[in-house]
Image (cartoon, rainbow, N blue to C red; front, side, top):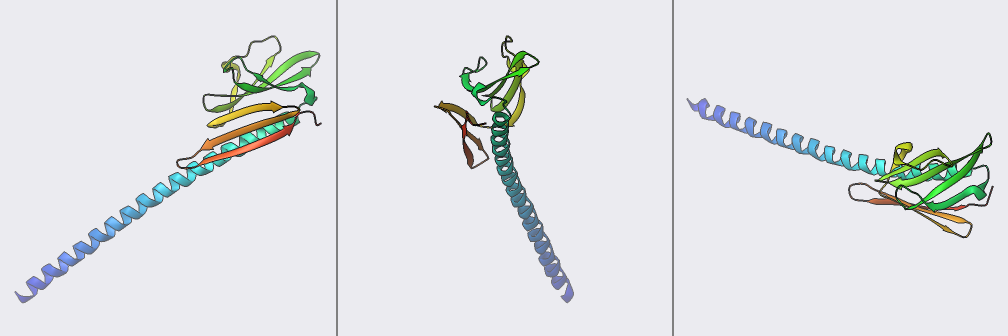
Amino acid sequence: MKNSGKVKIEFFLVMILLILFGVSTFSLVAGASKAYSRKSAENQAKDSIRLASAYVQSRIGQANDRKKVDVVPNPVTNENSIRIEEDYNGEVFYTWVYFDQGSLKEAFIGKDVALEDSYAFEIANLDSFEITKSGKLIIVDLSAKSQDKTYTNNIIIDSLKN
């Protein structure tokens, strides 16, 4: 009978320790999950910025004649976009790089074809993409948001330099 009280106390203490271990393990897993989600969102925003920046720079750099690179409003969103005029086998085509519904998009169409969003494919997800032209310079400002941070990049490209 004397050991009966001692066994109950030991059993109770072991149960308390198991409950504390379970609660601490659960809180550790929940905290790690939130940290992983936050870091993943940050990496995705940074990747989108890098991809969009590199894409715009390389696309303009690939233009055969930089004088045919222009900043004009596109017919889909009426926002400023990059339009590159290119000649293929004597025919004129336009490459449009524009921002619509949270995505940087590109469309490659004939000169006489009206630009429609269905012709475009998505390059990167962004929160903003603004293009201006100042003299011979093309200025591109882009940003992407993660859960708690906004990442931005500004690109200045000499549109006449080959």
